Image 1 (cartoon, rainbow, N blue to C red):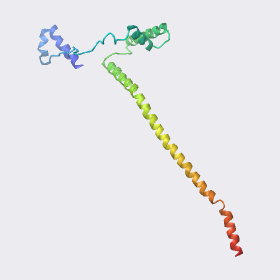
Image 2 (image 1 turned 180 degrees about the vertical axis):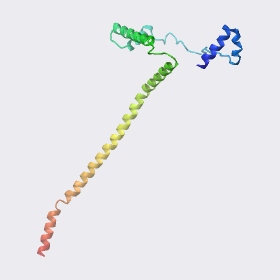
Image 3 (image 1 turned 90 degrees about the vertical axis):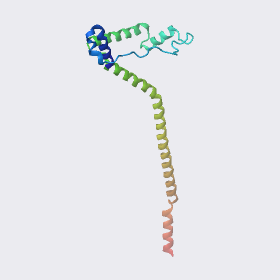
Image 4 (image 1 turned 30 degrees about the horizontal axis):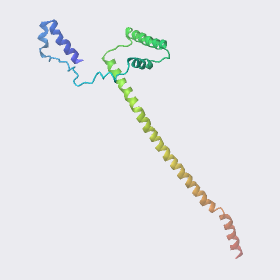
Length: 170
């Protein structure tokens, strides 16, 4: 925003030379170097995809089965956008551009992070399941061991009666 105001103020001196005194304190705005040195753009023709393939890829992204339905989707989207802009429901300004860029970045990052998160979550779930299964098997073995100990003592009542009867006789 500040650079836009500075450019507007420096352009003012061309229209009104008397405003040069106002712009004496504003530094000159120079454009960033726009030349691309050592660029490999555009790629060689052998590496470029065919225009038909590129057009078909773009058309495949639009929802719909036939060319007519895809055209209807594009027309409806354009009509809704134009209606929203003309009724000032959608105001495209700097905040809108920033919000759009942020949403685009968040969407891209989430799409990149989704497989990694799913992998981590599945590993964590497997680890928790393994701990729970190990605890269950330990509990089952402890219960079985206790059952075995108690089963050894199931004849205690009969042994006690026999010992009591022996003590009466003697």
